[in-house]
Image (cartoon, rainbow, N blue to C red; front, side):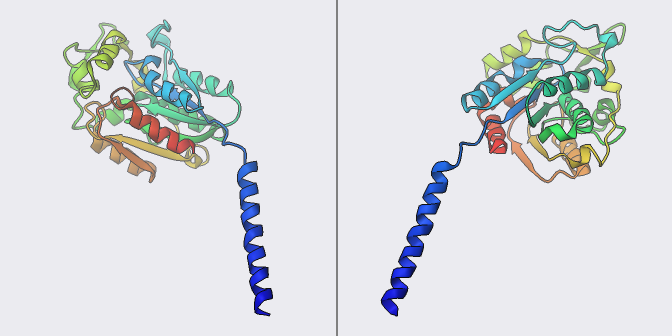
Length: 270
């Protein structure tokens, strides 16, 4: 009986090994994810270029949204609202197949929150990077007014008609990218333009039935001079987000630490 038992056991082990090897060979490679990246205030799609390049090199699909009134878009600021931004991102997602990983930075956090409320079934993961994260009925202005460590408010210069907000030239780099090298700091300076003001005052509506069921992640920027870390943590706690990362960066880690941002996003894709 003993030789029989040993032979049977050996055969079972070999069979399992063969099945495992067969499964490994027939498993298809993981399909690429689609990332939809939303920039923040006083910025434009250029801000994502380093991360976009790395994600594409790793076989991922990337869509970078240009918000109205930013970059090359010349929509008059008097006509812009947070809904204008939301609708631009919703349209970008509608043009993609399947689900997306939606990423928002700074003001973009307000936008992606509104998008998640509108089309929760299209979002696989929702990622905030140094971003505003509103509760129901909150505006960016309301959240920013509670930020005791931000240096942004003191640097703002409203236009005469109150339709745009600028930043004092001597404060742009210290507030946004004090930790970046000369090349990325030049990118920020060269691409700077005044920010439409109305969307800052628009509240976001969120519900448990829609926004509440989207899988959420937050990437803290621990040296942030625009959206303070204390405010980031308060917003995360209020939203009940438990999946967080922390980068030792200023407000724009996708420029100062693109490798680390890409690694976080690729980890989520897997």
